Length: 186
Length: 237
Image (cartoon, rainbow over all chains, first blue to last red; front, side):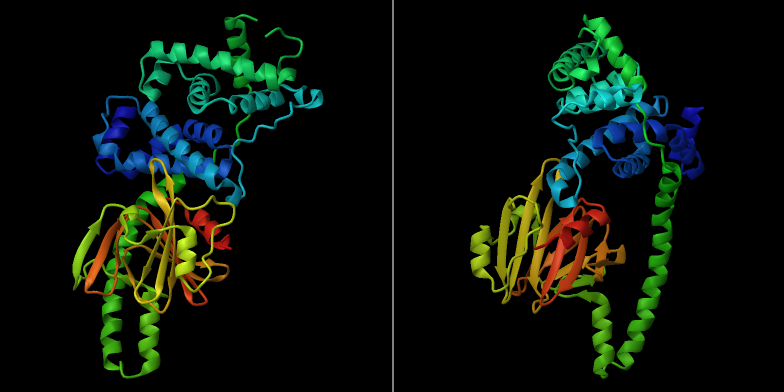
């Protein structure tokens, strides 16, 4: 059980912490990937998130679920990383706001996976807060309650922010990714 | 499409998003957690070895080649690596931030004040702050600010000076432009020695890359991974 593993890890049991990392590495890596846009950078961010969590583990309440706390740490690290690399991105040969100005072609749009990829590009047009809440709620499929824990807000705030983020996403899709909605009325 | 339909459409597309495979993060984390313990043990062994080496060198210090080699091992251009336990023999002026350094100027002012070309990392904007000091040879510090992160700085130091001491524990030998360089990871104290029996001490809460090219010692300091620091170093022009 997670609380037992946390208590063992707090007592210095590296094996217990390794199990916790294994249990959560996928969701942490995925959030980092969505936020920084590069698998290698996402792996670095995820690794750093677990290292920082380990350093602060003794202050963590073992009775609470670990995942929202880890996601919160990872989101902060990914945000800093993206900001830093966004600034130095040209020099470092990386581009983080990748969404093309032109809409994807009909050919590109014709598979579901490519639609999802285009959706991601549209989400990346939004501001950071809108992006993050959509990633947590829809792409990582967290509940409203867990999303609220990650963002340290009330569930009602999550719902209102999500509603606004979806409105803005629809505007971006209509303006820049119309083929995403081809055959549908948005 | 009304809001629930749009939300359902987003949900459906998001669910089908294909993520790259998750790498072995648990293994890497485990190695990193164990590394400081190994490093501490290695440092104890290393300190004992350095002491033995120092004793041996004392016996042969009159031999110039041997003395030079010993100093080379501890020094990269104008920067000397020192043990945290050393007691400064000068009046210490602690600095909260690199922005509190004396000698603030502009990039043009700095270039006019030094006799070597100041190199800038390609594609970076102009630095947010520039400092120049002379004692007697120049030291230029370029600073870029980043909200929520330690500043990124590039020091360019006339190697005829020996003006900086890094009190560091973790030292790794790396390469910049295929030449020897040193990577200092983790927080440590830094002393800048203006030469008037005072020193400016600053706590470095990030990592440092040091190397020497021609008559200049370069020092990149920032919250960067090693590969990023090397890319910045190799982009100087």
